Image (cartoon, rainbow, N blue to C red; front, side, top):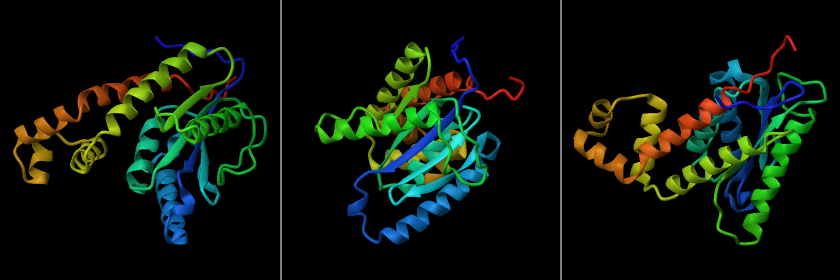
Length: 230
């Protein structure tokens, strides 16, 4: 079992930062679209959310979770809905030292948010230095959890390496499978192709390695839960 070490109750802070936001045409339209997407996230994943996802700056948004059950699904959903706009995500796991407003994710502070911010700044720095971008999602964990953090980020890099090579068709089919929870036969019927064709598409996209990576991260993060009794 994959254990974390915390001396105080952990939350999961997620910060999303839009890449090249100044180059987006009709930014007001996109902001309205993003606001609608975040409202949908707040509805779909309300059981895990302590403070609703909120646009905090023109090119940023954030939310706070008390459970790690839906972290990856939330991020994948936002990426799917905002495509082709690219977003970098910082995930910080740690305590929150201020009051939490459940309706709007503004004003709260603490190690959880500090770690998420550190992730965003580190990803930006890599891009400014024109290093090869290894991931668009990074996790930092407060306290003595270095090996857990290292393992999670290694898996995220694997996922990004696979995902960044998908064609438009592969992306469309894989997102349909992930979010509609359909079998290959149902997917083939929906896209009006043979099941063998779907199988070939998934194989070339390294879907099964990608899905294993998602499942591994989910199993690890499911162990992060805020305990009211502590």
